[in-house]
Image 1 (spheres, helix red, strand yellow):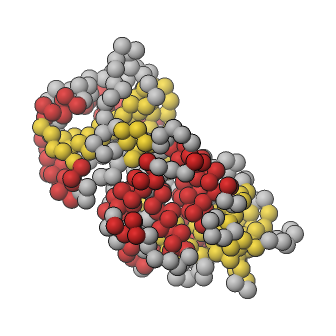
Image 2: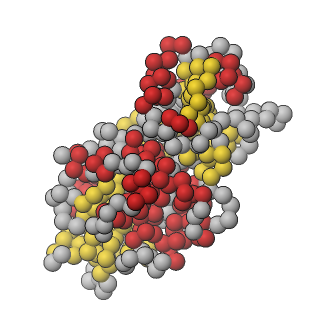
Image 3: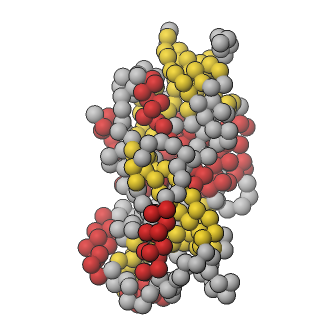
Length: 377
């Protein structure tokens, strides 16, 4: 195989939302190559998102990053188009009588409590008339949440990256990573590439890529989540319905392009792969929805599954490896990667370049230690 003729400052492995966003940020400062194993970007987790921006969702670090991303979503660069990236849709967490302790803990522990409102059973019913009478004992609603245009967000970053001079190669699964004379050589299915720094944004495959580089293992666990869309009678108007979720994440339901998107909100550990929906997940989901709502699922319009990859505390892993020089981790975004991507990309870019945390992110109370790779050791 021919020796590479160009050495990039940074090679980003993975063109999903994590890789595309950090590559776009870095391309302002240096030469960048994005390496993607699929034929198009965002094939796996990014393209299979439930597409919600929820500042109250996830661990404290994710909540901080999500809040810090809000301004970007409201006023993005021109590459992201003119259609709004966010469209208001409240999130409603509901609890049966036996789940009240979990609901109260969620409310009191949430760092965006000022955006939340506690609801009685009657108020929950008014927000979601499809809910079976008497099912919910109480609820908490977050009016600051929104639907996200995931495709526009991801493609906006891809366009921004290219407009800043970034390069990409597709169909290029990484076979090996070797380092010599301070340069990484990345051997892929399409050829060899060289870079001074490798950024591991490989999603569910991040630990496998880390092993190729001789880096530490971060304990990443990909977890399958199944989702499906169902049709209701044409006379049924649910367009203004909030996303409704069980407080223990046994299910969620939300309007989606004239249909209802439902999910058992499952997290089933499995190896990284092109994951497919599981029949048992689908059956469990339908059972939960029909038990909680006055809805009879008669037709499944579509079904799919995606991988949400987590480390033990469910916060991202960001920072240079302790055992592989100039190998940078950007992994473990779980199910929060898109809603937190603008702030996380800028934070990661600053870390890669050994710069301070951006002030606006700091102002949203992100604790750097909560996402540092150091915490895992």
